[in-house]
Length: 337
Ligand code: LMR
Image 1: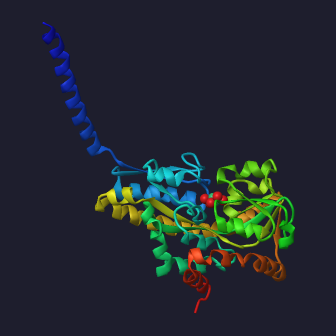
Image 2 (image 1 turned 180 degrees about the horizontal axis):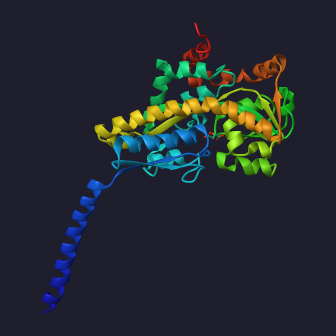
């Protein structure tokens, strides 16, 4: 009797389990591959627009097979957590600034060296060279693969007081990305660098917990930093570019007939984003100027030369970690002939 009472539920349980397993398998066959793409900037930026373009191109090429979900504005992960999350499989793609990989590799610090590149054309020449392409794989031993570079542009200095010469920055607190080169750069002008995630910058500036920061025109505009910083110095002293990364595990686990069209979609989206970066550097500067909220300071050649003189020696501190030959190759990309 007892046996009978128990055998029914057990049979039902087994049947139920078998059905659930088959149900899950059937569902899995239809389930799309989801690529969560997390980033920290606004949607109306080179990175935000590139990510949306990528999503649309993947949908066009792969239909329901692959779905890209874009999470802007640090919604899913801030820039201090996203790479760890990627290695855990909680996010599949991101495009952190090249300054944010220092826990994984030394060589990408190259891109933070002040006054290394004269313009984005020089950056393009270097990134497309063998050296630049090899750097995409510099974190493979840590489980991360670089799929391509994306521009944002040259950084400007914003502050609560006018910055014309390096002595004007003496004693001021600047928010920086988590990079030792950027730390050394601000120490070189006797300022105090403070490493903070991007999501905190507006509030830090608004509450005057910090005096200034460095960023591109599109970030200063889209995150409204110009509303809480009365002065922006057009210094073009450094580069803010990105690397689109994924985890080796995720990428190598994709079937070839998915990985290839996803990569093609990304390449096309990056070309689109790079053009937006160039356009926005002009348009967003213009919008900031027209807002009347802050003064844009243009440096004379003599004033700019002072910043170069004080900041460029920072290169020496990092040349061993980055590699002298790599620095020379990047600097040589400024020559067109
Ligand atoms: C920053 O932290 O200032 C930038 O890296 C934000 C970004 O991704 O452009």
